[in-house]
Length: 68
Length: 90
Image 1: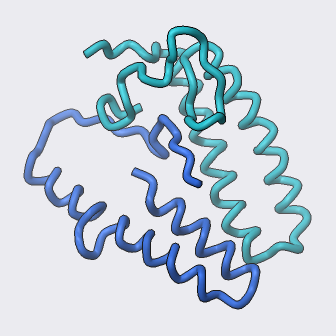
Image 2: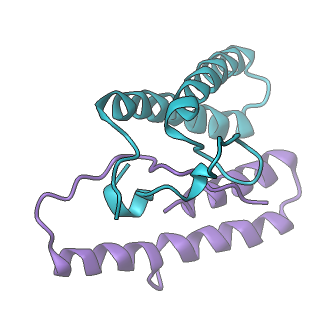
Image 3: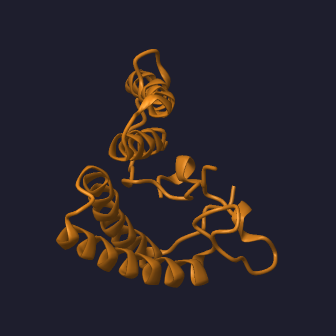
């Protein structure tokens, strides 16, 4: 079960809106090589881990990586 | 849209929460692969205690920081209050 935290990990202050930059950033998050895809890979790789340390680290990195 | 969820004091509190949470995330990931490092674990527990206190303080004034039973609300239901993090960058 995922819990949503109603705050950002790091605060964002947009001084000058920049659509082109926004497109790059949104691709970094949701694009084919983005964090969202990476997080889901971590979360499915965790099912194949043989030791507790590896299960935990993939679970936790997958969780952290999916934070928007 | 009503963008009034936090004032300056709230933002400052939130910055403290973020700073401590950064420590707990990092120590958590470290401990996942170093589960016998008791010194790091004590440090982790210490940050957890601080984090819980700060979150309680924040939530009493500015509303719940987490959903699904992780924080109480006053009436009316405060979870739907704007701005959301993607709207105002809090």
